[in-house]
Image 1 (cartoon, rainbow, N blue to C red):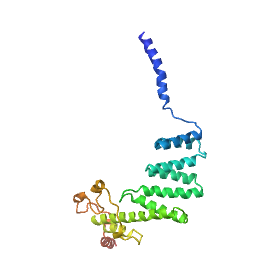
Image 2: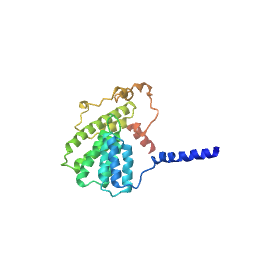
Image 3: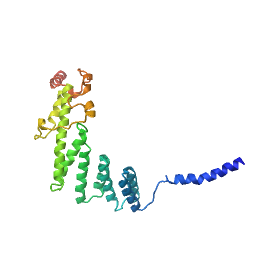
Image 4: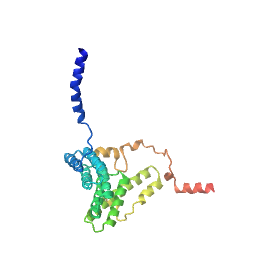
Amino acid sequence: MKLKSYLATSLLLLPMLFIGCSKDVEEYNKPAVYWYSKIVENVSKGNLEKADNYYSSLQGEHIGSPMLPEATMILAIAHMQHEEYLLSEHFLDEYIKRYATPNEKEEAEFLKIKAKYMALPNPRRDQALIDDAIVEGEAFKVNYPSSMYLEVVNTMLIRLYLAQFALNESIADLYDRLDKPRSANYYKTVNPQPWIVSKEIDRAVAPWYRAWFEGDGTSSWYEFMIPSTKSVVSRNSVKEDEVAGDKNETK
């Protein structure tokens, strides 16, 4: 009797189990308009992770769909508005390489520069990203000399050059304190912009909760812990007269 009751209970629970699992079954083999509508729906709700997943389905099942270019640009702009600039740049790259016409490419290139620029909110951080943004901004000016976005790009470039100069100046000061004159001299001369006057730069100010750890670019609260003697000697810390002496000794 007990066995029969267990079997009866199991049979009653099985439909409920399948109903619960059916909600987690992955969707597939849907028309392009279905995936597109799901992307738009989830972007409007702010659920970009789910929208990205639906985009993968649209791209995987309908590689030639005319809805793909618009969906790609929608996600690029949505990620930028949510301050997810690397993802925004990814979708803009996809749009430029695969879908953009010559006229549409100009706007996409501008948005890509804007994404890089907006990804740099903190002073004295991410030297490579600053350099990349400058390269792309200068290339945009060459490729689109009559662009309606030209003045905006010029403004971004000026601020990027100032940020690059201030960052290199801070790095040079650091190498001076570490007694690495060759490295310091490199960063003092690496800025190619003669119009920049150091004392006229209005430098970015870090909030107190970051400045306490990062310092002002010239010193930090933990400076007393840095040993006054060099513990590691690198190629850049060797002075010119020492290098000359070594060459003479090896002759």
